[in-house]
Picture 1 (tube, rainbow, N blue to C red):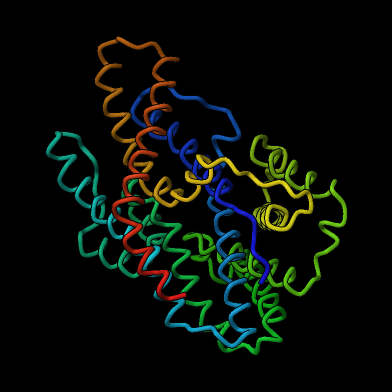
Picture 2: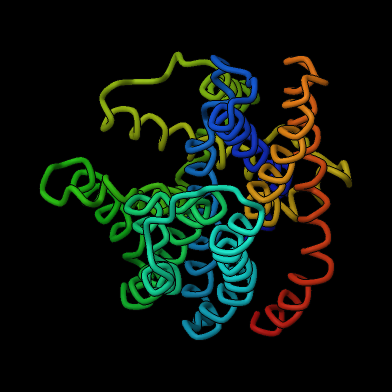
Length: 355
């Protein structure tokens, strides 16, 4: 299996787009000034979908390789996912429950809670956070868990599926699953798939691209140096403009899937030979899981502080906006760094034993 270039900077960029997506939302909700009308700040959900494609690409690529050499273990696969995902997922879940049920009432801040503790436990312990978020609107700290729930559901399903399918038929099997599920998702047969965002097709598509590359079927994508640059430019346009936004959800998701798959493949296999070697960017990408999980906490804290100053008319609108962005990003990165160094690394060291 060919060693891939470092994709950590991409993770940081995607996590940052999600942060940019949520800052105006909470600012508007609290009556603070905010930046509006900037397409990049409206693409947080799409950034999560790129994360899905990347996850499917890496995970299915690894399983496919392990199957080829007869070394795939479902037990080890699940243990590695558990040790990487569970600790921070459940930490944020418990903090979210404390935040909305205890801290906000203590501070005299009203927040409508539409669910019981038992309901929160049921949906989130069993990784149905996407369903929980849609039904109960539980607040941003708990709402961000929806995407982790989707990934965990997918991991639970994909490991036994790829274990059962003969290795020489995995590509065909995944391709059929992708097209079948994509059509089913966008049909009216099972409406809850769309309602609760069971967008497994993004993860499956990433895996299909990974296997197509492993089987040497995508050489044309890097046959020249212009095409990789063109693919990156298309994705930049996608995130910085609304040119590619389509009202038809089927076509929009199909276009998004195609562009995201091409982007991941280009960054992983381009023939330009360029890699980002900036140690800061690479580290920020390494802690991107924490950046994604902690940013709503940092945003709530930043907005709470700014509100106290803004109410006294000590800040103008432009300075308020700048301070919220700076404080949110700085606090998020500090929290993610401390979490990675003193919490997550303990589990990652154990995870390495299950290679």
